Length: 295
Image (cartoon, rainbow, N blue to C red; front, top):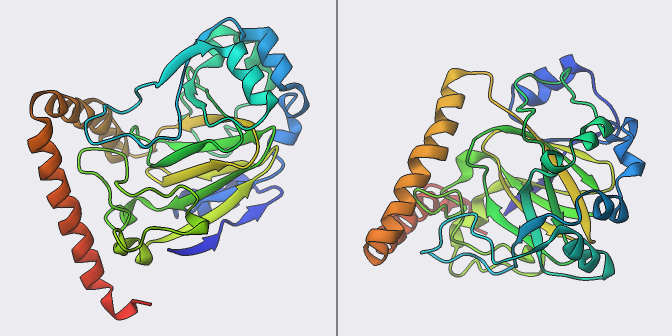
């Protein structure tokens, strides 16, 4: 992997953000957005346990999904408060994602302000919460709706690996899916380049998010996240400002995913073999095109 740090600023004007990051599809960490919100100090484990602790949530472990598993299938269910108590207590390889906590406790929305000055198109009905215990992992993927994301970290640190969407074949994207066939868990301690050699040429970014950091992830960016500490994050999603981007998100959400789920149910082995051949073909092409840079 050819990695560089994500640019980090304390604050940025809307004009600078649009010209240098939004329009150029470049990631950015902004440190001061969340510090202006009541949520910066108000959002704690106990606060959420009191607010929505009785709600049931799906939890996900660190095991990477296999070729036959529909995406976003929970590994177990438990009360949100019970889960948060486990997270608070220490290392836990369970996480939750895409949890609309604000639907259950709408008063929490008053704890932050939508940064409309930075970009338009926020989907304000679905600000999502993400929680992970220390040691939990979000495996490499891109968001299926192809939205821009402002991802703010609370209560702990999280390591994030990022790649532009066009690096997909170097990352071993599974056809008709948003996931990579490769496992990037603990990548900094050793990655399986023997079985996934094209990843050597993938150009991306690396950053550690701390309490209050807001990461701008442009639409379609691949991301892999590792919770260095137990933590909570919120994602604010904004639709792309062009029709093509919106249509692409709709197709992936309702067309691509539906076809993949149907094929996994009706012809799983054939579908798996077909995907495997395509993954290898795309990766070999990337290796061939970059072979003069092998190191």
